[in-house]
Length: 390
Image (cartoon, rainbow, N blue to C red):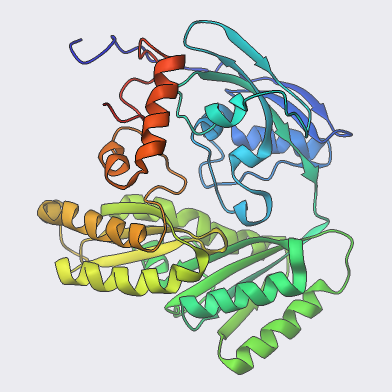
């Protein structure tokens, strides 16, 4: 090929063994092809928790999760995939194997190759196994679906919950009415919490261990929030089935989005305090470009929003091809102005290389090119991805 090596597709799906679960050390050694749900299940057998959780956990594999530094719904409490990994085993571009399956929490013996390979999307080496962090399992969960005044109210409520419950706040998801309308449109079998969906909602999940009276304390907090107008309505799950129904709403919104079909999907992050401003200004910018439906939802506790733009109901998204670049540029320019990033958890790949060149720090881009050239001088690892050409 004129533009690089002949492509080879490599599947690690048969490297699917959990090699070890060390409950005392809170460590699991899993091969790259293990499905995320199976990693979670193996941890559960040992009465431990592997907290990485996302909608595709029944099919995605831990090697891919690490290669993309996956996020999900519990980053607020436990961090991204990078934060959940102690060490790696990987094949480097020269064919050598890095035996880095450390179980150590402290290791200052040189450069951290683990963090370099995680999130590199296979451009610096192939992850074959990982040493993963485990955690004690919460005794129970207290989960609430809340109708809120607006995104600013979500931030007020988040602050109150973190003050009241500290590290128990496992997830705090912002959901817009449009997401539930999409569920009604294409996935009507999903049980929704509100007969008439409010404009803005929060799905709150507390992971509780040992402490008593948490539900009563949450009821008290929400009672005050209802009086002050931060919260308009509140539903607290009364059993595991209701909790599962609440989470099914959040976890099927991405599938509903796919079935409806976006003009363009944005995976962005901004400083948490700037979320209300971003939503307000982005809505106005898009409205100035085209008539569209916007489904904005995401992990408000860590500043990550999925800001997706759709054609009006009944119209074909293909008719909006001439506005895609204008919409994308307007959203990304605003994100950059607010000190955010145009890719929060979905990576760069090839599609976003031009955006990385436009918005990326020049010194960082130069360092990325140097690292790529040093480790993969022949450009054989996922050629054309992540690293902008010179």
